[in-house]
Image: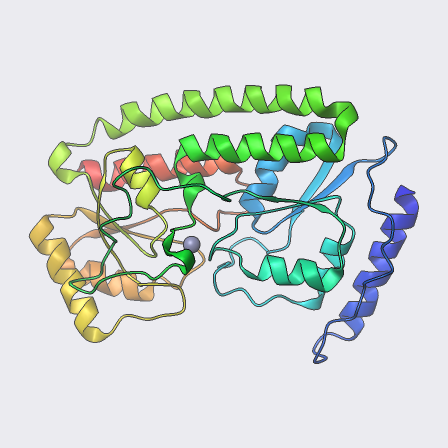
Length: 319
Ligand SMILES: [Zn+2]
């Protein structure tokens, strides 16, 4: 069974690689009748962005093989799916993505495969905490980011929501593989305890930043929940949404805002060209550091990414 699937995956990957650049993806529907989990092999879990795959790996342990559609360091908002993605999704037992305007192409790609995989939409039905996101982040005076359905999709950067993601992954795995449901739930519980321990450490770290310096300017609007959770004021963003460059006037307004609010640093993200942020930082006379939201350095898991974010925020703002 597993061998057959592996061969099928290789065949599919080969055939779509051969016709890369063709107008339409190679149809795979119908070839993948069998996606039911069997006790004899590992569950194949496919996520949209790599950071979710690292969560699945912790919850699924040795019983899952998790991977992401997107390569590390890529921006999911503007991602253009390639035929290889369809082949990947076609062999999945469980598909995990965020939902909202983070990874809207996932739903379309899933339809294209005719996949029968169970699907977990991590942010489904989540509501921003009271008061968060009502005053949207802005560059200068410009009113901000338009998110589809009006909800900012970056919930996992607040560890309270990260815990909900972990619980949803555990339930998804338990439904696909009921025989190991207890294992997945126990793994999730251990992981949640680790996330809580991280959160306590993070709050102690943030507390070392003088209150008047707890001001955040990020590259794209990914951090409203993170900022609210840790009592940071989100003063502005460099780009209003991925793929939309600010006007020279908006850039000037942001520089002015950074100066007048006394924001100590601004933060770039690896999936975006840092040039514009570097120019803004130079004009405003502040430092540039890195934060991770939709893309983390290769080999970094969810908690590793969160720790680096907190460490960098403290380094950038504490002074
Ligand atoms: Zn984003």
